[in-house]
Length: 203
Image (tube, rainbow, N blue to C red):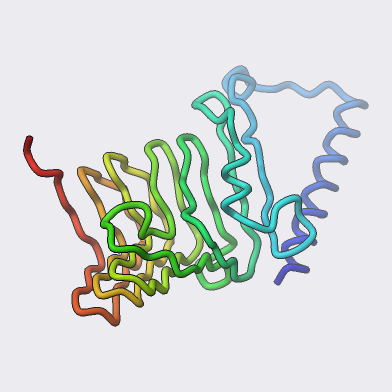
């Protein structure tokens, strides 16, 4: 699978090189609307052969993402074990190579109902797609994706939580994520919730 991902990157590089060569030999007319759109910055992650092998480090390296400078963190096939919470960032899309071929897993679990018990923590204006998130827990609370006052976009994602007394596929606090083709799973505990929606207590 890694080989296929690297071949894809190599083919993409060849296409860009050929496009550049062709542009040097002929005049290319670019529509005004297209000229206004900035290309997305791409950060590649793979089990080997890329600058990053850790999705958390890849996302953490991005410091200048905004509406005019969006990023795509492209994660190749494989299983990636996280030892700390992956914190999503605004205007950053985190995309796997398919929910059946890219898995982010880890045992991040505490007694708290917050990001410290979550494998992934959401953000506004952010997207998570085409992968599986799997928190195997070990403490009292296990959360696959935690959203607090933010509403990321989720597309073609499996979100699985287990190993805790309280397991949550998606835990929302005052959040309304957009979910398309999402499979939330929570199993093995005394209390299991695929999607749990909560509001903070009134002051």
